[in-house]
Image (cartoon, rainbow, N blue to C red; front, side, top):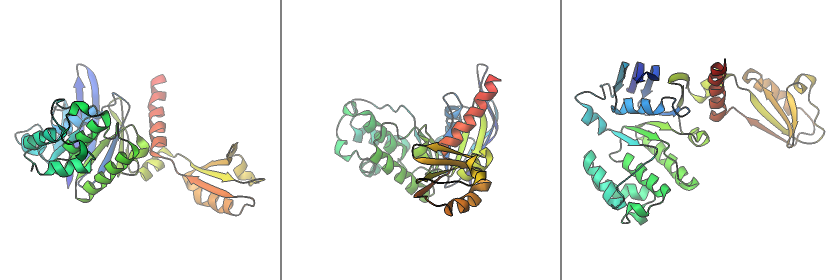
Length: 301
């Protein structure tokens, strides 16, 4: 079942084309990473899915319905949303804030205790929010987004202000929600942290879709090379590989195409004096940088 569907969606603001002809399909139980520079159209896409705005052209469907239609209230009860700069009533305690949102959403208030424990705020549940650090407020925002075990969860920079352990716990929670059938959209600038958690990535630039697919399919689309790092002394490469190599402080670095990967590996395994061999596939950050450099090159031309 498709949880989210956008067909040929445009969104214009006072002459600014925030989105242009965007298509997106998101299946139940999948995690989508939504990426792009500031102004790329990420927030506009999220607002369309939440039903906060209507498209200028095209069609938006969430759970098969128009998120701005007559059934919008019931649709939103199945959604969880965390915005980038989260803000709460300063004089309320963490427990009171979560209880308030649980009531708004029609959720069981008993969830609040478990969620505060889950995000590491049980010890501060009765403290006023004004005493919370930025990271603690972000955790409270995560708890709010998880109320009601949402079927669709939209998270904008969810790990901002979280320490490494809290970030790891967050992604463990995301994996658990996915296993329970939740569908998730993640927006983040910390691509290394997101990479292992998403099923697909969608990269926007200037309101346009620049790239979309699984990590493996995006590697094929961008044709980024595989990097081999050889360590050892007096390593002599075959002549056909010497042209593709360079010396580094760690040893010899060699970059080859995806098609050459296995053949090159077999050659390198036969070499003498190789103490260690590392293989690095292109990362999500490499793909993003490559994709964005393409649109920047078009701008200069």
